[in-house]
Image (cartoon, rainbow, N blue to C red; front, top):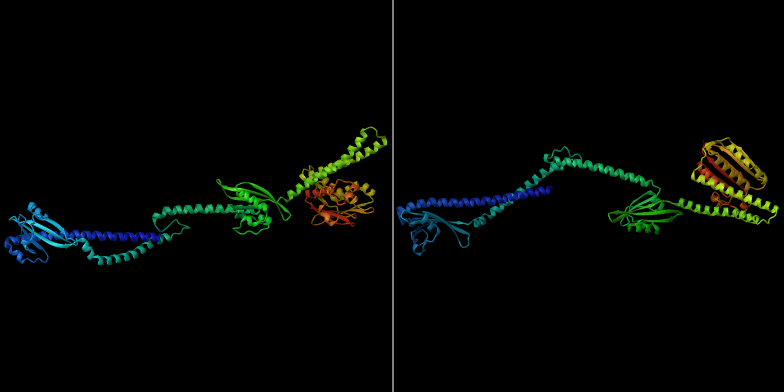
Length: 551
């Protein structure tokens, strides 16, 4: 702005100077010409009087250094001339000033030299005797005069330019200084120029609007950051070239990468699935795939981002679906195991029923077959019952109200139900400990204790024991079921709570059971937010401890 004002001021000053010089020069030229003509008119009046008195003798004594005087007859013949011999001069009747003098009493004209560097001004008047008296003087032309004055004009112009430069700089600086001193953080009020007040008020209002929008943008950005950073799913935003714009911590953790600004998504991870969905999304299509990484399974969901019809980037969501995969795998295994477990007793029932249907079976055999059918039916009922219990625990659809339970009393009650089976297996059952109370569903906790004791008896050694011990501590209430049976190998312990999983399948067939007991224990513990610990060694025994929160 300072430069623009400086240039404008300097240009105006120079134009004014140039216009002034031209105007003054033009005025002076006109003034000098009028002055000369006035002088010629005055002189011709004086000379005409003298000529009338002295006659032609005047021309002999006249000083012709500055002016020339000519006496012309009415027919154009030159009678006398101060500079030339009249006899050598042409007839002047055709001269403009002579013709005007003859017709109007006086006349004037201007004639230029061949080089047009000089001009002659003529003034003529008609004398009383009819002759024409003409006075002339020479004068340089305006161009010649300008050339003669060129050096002083250049000097004056140079001085004026320097002066204009200095004054323009100071004027522009003085104009701009108040504007530069305006506090844009608080533009109103201002001490600069009154004319700037409307503009400054608009700037102030616009500044407030921009600050408000910046605060809103920062707030939205912070909200977005908090949302993405607290997502358990990985989140990536990329531009049309694949450069990562946003990458939350979950994505860095899931992909096992370190992110720096400007990285390309195709270089972040070696997974071909990630590159595949990214390419499809940048082509403007939705894409999904699964990626296995470090024993985890992730779902890759990529959606393009459009600006009109143009794809300007993509959003990639990376949820961890490992648990979903495991549940799906468990569901398939459960379905397969259920089918297998149901098929065996149903085949037995169907086979014996078919034999009995023929009517050729004697009465004693029918009784034996009926016993087998009854046992297999009870096995089916137990299996279905356990499946229903697991389903209720999985879905949290238990319709029983939690209550205060004395864990020691409940353990004794469940142990009493298993005494016949324990005596048959020559296993000693004992229940000891504190009268600790917890808050829970009595039926579910009873099933948990029953299944733990039942397993201790089934997989115990003849002459062994199954001990239940209740302890109350600061951390909670624990119930431990301990036996000195066949034990569980360390490699098998992580899987004992899976549905239908049996460590010793040959022994399991002998002792019976549905294979869902420990699964019911696990889901019951989850339902009550309890913790399960397992300690076991082959041929030494097993201790399973469940710790409940205090009431």
